[in-house]
Image (cartoon, rainbow over all chains, first blue to last red):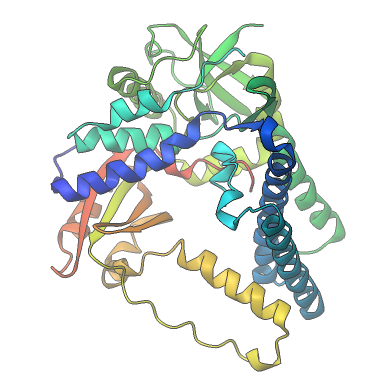
Length: 114
Length: 77
Length: 226
């Protein structure tokens, strides 16, 4: 491997911070029900998993849309359903004081998919 | 649990380097490469109870969907 | 059955002279159908130290020198041999496809550095977009977001010179100045000098490019969920 123009200090810092963010995903993420607020903990886990699945389905829907294996009607129906699901997740979350950013159980390497 | 999860402290220690080539090594080895497990630890009252391996199940579901598309004669995504 | 530490997924058995694993343990090859894995016996996951990371990378490089196609496995992958065999069998198709992509190839890592992301062209309206319902417009907008997150428009001036060399591209956008994006390029083995010449010939401007490599194709391992 030959020498490369090295990164300046600020660039190095930036890369380091970015890697620290991403490498932190390595440990198995933990969900531990908070005994003081079990309802909120349960809501958070359930909504996070549903949001994860919603994004998984959205990605697949986009792939199929690009590949032309969805009819225009199917595209419209799937798009609408995904929109409604996103709104529903946000509404239910709001009832438990959960913002969209709270739904980030961070499924480790799987989370990278999204 | 057989494995000891990698701690943030270990990885942070590695990252406090001025060696940009080591950062590339970290990038390649700790954020890339084939992932052989995607796990979640579930617990209650601060006690870890369940260690769930998700990757085999999720992967299989994805591939099952593709095979059904094949069977139906639709072009594969 | 004991645990094995997995170094790489291979399409063929390597020559026997690839040396030992990162803990000096003997390497062996485990076959599961059409896919093989290079593993070493280990009782515990190695600590994340510079020495261990470099030793793991060295093992991958020796293996890469001994086979045509290699998919490096993430550091720290310790699991029961039976689980590994199951995973290889379940994921055989995607692994075989990935091995075909990386055969005879290696990776260059390109950091895109600058103060502001490149101006993005406004997405031109889809034909008949006025006729699209809200669901279809939503999906189209989400598709555009997915695409933008995986694009490096900063490389546009270099595309005519890069395209002949780049067999596959993977982009991770950071958009945290000065680190704008990391671009991973798959090139033919031996093309690193030509690649570096192209990057070195980039016109000076708002964006700086820093290339490292060649590396084994870490960034072209499949992500497991298609």
